[in-house]
Length: 595
Image 1 (cartoon, one colour):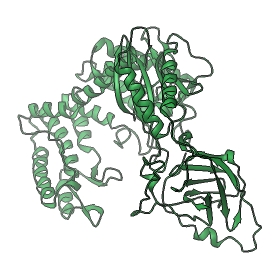
Image 2 (spheres, one colour):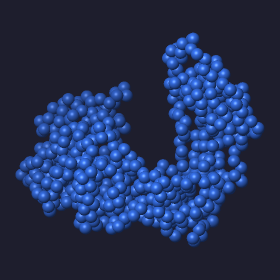
Image 3 (cartoon, one colour):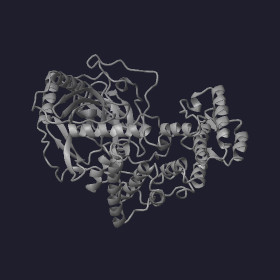
Image 4 (cartoon, rainbow, N blue to C red):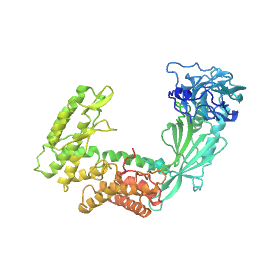
């Protein structure tokens, strides 16, 4: 992979090189010279050269001139921006000459040089390449020049991709050569990720077939996706192949011709077609070989209907969790407004403080502070309303925290009246801990949620506060564990005690989901050996992990019986097969940060 383009001074390295150092001749051969994406050696191309003694031990990276661009060679007029950029011709006392013309240098190290072919190069015959390091010349080697792929070559590749897709055996079981995808590749996408990846390289194409678990009762891994891509993927060739594929698909897919296909981010969908239980896609794959994206490949993707349905189901469940869960901001806002007789209104912060003018920030801070003080002064006559006022005050405290900071000379700092506000709120037991390292807002310790739960545990909002504290994962210090410690076991202990004491809580569904996730984390923490830092996280025993897996399955199945069709239950539908097959789901909730 080509390196990023950044400026790096080599003066120190050069200064430390003794004048009497032994002369070292750069070593390389024509076989060690490779244009990106297997493209022809032609004007403007980014080329990697591998060998020994090519440059310093500490790599140097060249920076493109910000205000200069080359005129593309008429022999290859369509070039990317990086191919027309101007790079230094000497980098860390190293030069590369192509046909006696100095090439622009993007990266130089002892074992690799990335350079740009001069625009003066031809596109037929051959030329010479030579490395000169600290005045010592390496061998002159000859490389063949080339032109872009012809339409006939692109047609041959497109035909090979189409043929490879038709040869996919969708009923074939995976083999021992297939790679098991690790939890590191699954984290955050556990319910939609493949479990195995099988790769087959053919003369013009690479075919990747991907397996997914299916079935809640007796799950098995089935081939549900295939990706076919050319072996050669430089921009001009990919564009030709893409157009040929689009023309072919545009004529319609005849029954029985093509079995299944799939896709995935971060690809740009060019077109998609339905055929039977299959969905076909043509994707542009941004294969960003640094610097700045040298190539874009084309991928022919196929998804079976089962996978399309699973992905749709997951997306709908994820969206529903944000709006239909009793722990979602919108639902909490509706309930609080009703409980407090309209005295509270949830308002999503549509603008961050750094997108506001100072006058807008001050006005928002004053308005939010008035509403917060009103909630903090709410009388204790009605237990349900008082608990609701604490939960509403928690949201207002967090909202106010985003208006108690400002930007000065590019730095985030406390607002000018923060000291006054801090004293005012301290009288009500509200304390801000400081500006968050990642959030850039004033943060506090969730003490209002803790008061709602500890003072009013038998009320609806007191119990909601308990779940909100659990959902904060390991951030709610003093409620779960000390800062920096894993908290999934505490989530389990406190959650099970909560359900034992309040079995008929209106939040039973949400608590079951949190418990299932915590048990799933314990299983995944053990199963994900190789992708977990056990110096930070204590590894569960095999027996504890197996018990956690079975418990997670039981909890997800209880969710299916209790609230079928709910977003929490739908997530369980996707995870139960993976858990029953003893696969790592990649779950990492309720673990301390590794930062």
